[in-house]
Length: 267
Image (cartoon, rainbow, N blue to C red):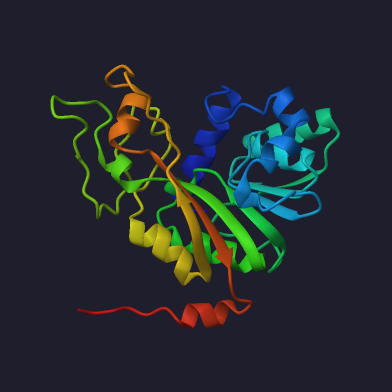
């Protein structure tokens, strides 16, 4: 495990112990009505009941619990043992069966190929320096025709200043930055204490395609609110949508064939 992975593991362990944002389990209402709530998501394509579902980098007692309550056969992978402990705790309280695996999102070698019908990944790719291995790993464990639904931090949002200037929210980080982003304090768009990286659109969208996925849909969840206080999360989201949600489908059984089709154009 690299120093970045180890740092983020410890950071999320600490965030879970302190019950900070994104480490709070699903509510009783969300669990009790999970099947109905999830059915409203057209991307899931019907009921998840009986489907093999991977919740990737999704510990914390929320994602996996809701899908298990809706009848899915759930495996949750997370780098943080403390986040996975929350999943086991809530699952035990609710009498739900889930499998927890402590691992990084870019190394799923402990999971079988073609093992999942659906892979769900909340915002998390920002915590690895290279997103391509993540997509390669997801492609390997997703069955042909399976669906990969993932959410990511938009690169423009990670480039921009946390605080507004007289001209709005200005870009202060280069688009082609490869080093970790500077530490941040007091931002709802970033998680203090973690190491984060900016991934470009060609790495996000292109990376999925190069791993054997076809992009079927894309959404920018709306967090903007009219008349929100200047400098607030809702105000900044009106200038720079913080997230992108992507639906992709696994198209091939042969990962080696997919990898061999990667072409670099030189102009």
